[in-house]
Amino acid sequence: MTIDDGRVRCPWAVGSELYRDYHDLEWGRPLHGRDELFERLCLEAFQSGLSWITILRKRPAFRAAFADFKVAAVAEFTDEDVTRLLADPGIVRNRLKVAACITNARVIAEQDLDLDALLWSFAPPPRPRPRGVGDVPAVTPESTAMARELKRNGIKFVGPTTAYALMQATGMVDDHLATCWVNV
Image (cartoon, rainbow, N blue to C red; front, side, top):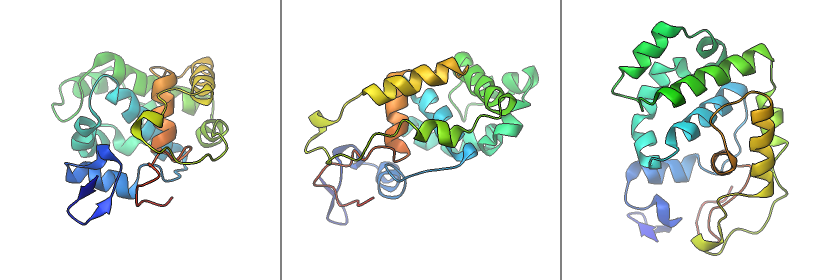
């Protein structure tokens, strides 16, 4: 499908400038760094059950509310921070998701978990790009193994589908369609 500039994109990236920019500049591009991957882990959890556009629209507010997703800072959040977050209309105010984000920061900080190495250890070998949307899986053996290992380490609110979405978002897999202009 095309959007204003004539470039062929993945169908989900059409219809919103936020989607287009996220698709063109971030999605599927390799991402590294503890805080950067922590942000994506949190946002994927917050997205669960919602549309991604909701998260993209609220992303600046999420960053402000969660100290730019700095693991060390979020790990220090208190009950007062939870109250503040649950009252913040700029973010998704789901108590379980807020608690998971804070718990996950604490787990990463307390275990000095190398989140980058851990997550990327599940990246599968490169494969051909999917030809159509129906060729894009929601779950893979790698995402199932990643979710299992994250849970084993104490990470909350991540299952195989969320893990696969994280893999897509951070470039561990390239699910841009074969016809998509983006070359990662």
